[in-house]
Length: 566
Image (cartoon, rainbow, N blue to C red; front, side, top):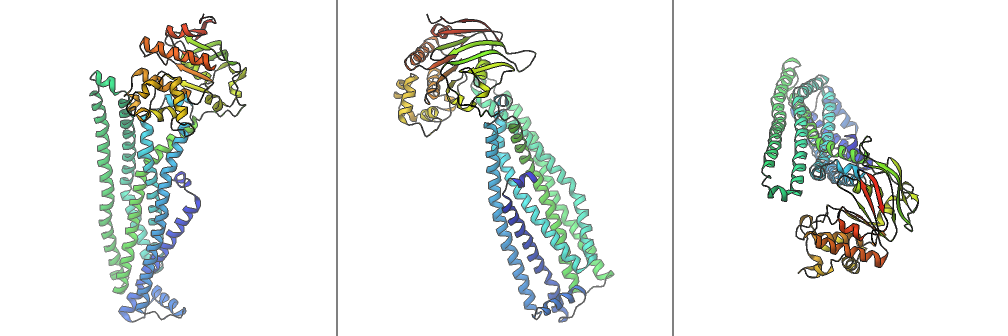
């Protein structure tokens, strides 16, 4: 909860606490006025103990202690309490929204700043649940914590009043409250445990469903989507059982407090009338104070239970933020890169398992203004070389050089902004063609989009669409053909005028004719503009079109053909 409170500005937290404290004092004064009020009604103004002291204090202020006066104190105290609580809860409401938004933004910031290797290990659906359900629960946790604080302040206020009236009654209230807390604490633990179980299985269900929907086409095509229903039903059943237990625990906590309160009242009234032989009027007020004190303790315990339930979501999303931040990409604030000569690898070795390198002692060049193709079979390390070139992974030995400067000495973000990247697994967003090309960046205008589409060979098919650039491409670009998706992805990579265009198996899934057209367009673009192209492919079309070819096998450079284009 300390971390949750740290999200909110200290000033707002202090203001809220001060309001709640004074609200408790105002209510306490209002309730305390009942005791001298009953005395005035029953015996005309005489009293003993705390009652006499209260009457004497009022007279010392120059005010006559009348029934009307104490009724006015009661009304003003309760009205003041209501106003202060309303203001405090208004602050809490704003804080709840701030917590949810802050948690969401912290998660997004941590995710976008993480290393590439972090994303490989994380299910996408886990973050969808964190941004929606868990972030909402984080705000609710703050809300419940504020309500719990208000109840605890009320408990302290009532205990103080009861102690002032009768220390015996105060000790009885605390004793009964302690018995209530210890007796019903089991239900608080059950609520916390079931909340975490629900959260855990809900994350798994959402993650699994997200992954399934991403690859739903082959699952449907093979008739194998139905098997996932059983997996989701299993998680749903666990969630249902946990919800039932949690609901029972919450209602049991509330329901069992009433007989405990009744027992408390019976014992208190018996001792007051029979053992202590107090006046009936005082017993009535003391019974009210006792009931309010114990009931407030019960409400505080219910508040603690609500905090524990909401806390599960906050803990989960906070853990996700911590893990993502721990995987934060190392910032390279080095020199601004240039690309006058080209890029090169010198004795580069990299592997996820140190005993089995993916790339071993690789040395080759990517000259500026030429088309370079890296070829090799599956698992040869072609894509890994791209990851190393872009700084997504760092070599365990050797150096990646940009104009003879080690990549680690350069501003890595500036270097990446000089490149255009088209992967094999294209990601088009469920948005318009224009938005997919510009990625929503306002600095690109219609002329930039038209130029990029023309360079990618996509302008003709876009012009033929009824809605043109406003055509919505569907989820992952499903409304476009493979070749059309590829051209849009290339246009996206070209719109910011990159110095280096990287095509990572970008045409592997296309038919030979479509691939040949894209290869021709890219090569012509490179010849006309001086664009440097690095194509990763095992297809012969790129090897034939390249100025030189780097052949990889089992992570090693087996040959470099610098005359392949001839």
